[in-house]
Length: 323
Image 1 (cartoon, one colour):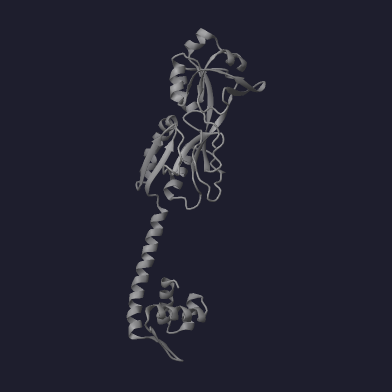
Image 2 (image 1 turned 180 degrees about the horizontal axis):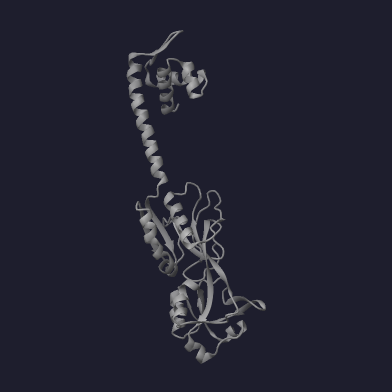
């Protein structure tokens, strides 16, 4: 027996002076109403109602119990309404994980705007280029830069990043400017450790798609490190536009093979499960979608009970596909 439901039935019987009227008001059968009241009386070991063929009225114990039921049910309903309203409002601590470079260049400038719209949310941003387990480390949301999000996670596309092939003018002056992707194999290249293609770069251009093996003079798991090495003249890099845009604008880097393009990568918000998605998570994703201006349909669906591991290889450079 559900005590709250039984109390509601008892109150209805008292207020409508009968089982039939109460049953009609509650859209129950008269027998169901009778059983609920009988079960309540058995639970309390007290007779709550005087029953005659013409009338049902509360006993003295029942009258006192009725008054307390009315008060308790009103408090219970108010509590549920308050909790329900609170549950719809973004609040609490929101733990976010993101790649270092993207977090600094793109995410950090957006946080004040979100915080201003949702003052009840406490933002906790962790920037890391290492692989993290979202469940084990308690992250509500992660930003992943990859062509294919992990199938164990729910992913919402936020934006797309172009991959730019570039080098310092001084490097090109010393070693020459590549005229065709095949020329890259004769140049010093600065490789991202989690590059999906391993030791090959795939480019698309006037002659279709070309896969070029590159000799890595240096490797790093952070795009900003590679950018600085390229600016210093160490070699050619292929990095997302948000990492190299300023260096390109001020001439410290210049594009290489302008007629050829590497496939872009998607920027995704990923989280562990769609069920009971907290308002703080949903509101933050919606905010990012609005500010980044992307088509943001769901891309991956977690299987029921699937363990969400964000060992996605998207990092602050070009991510290999999430696993």
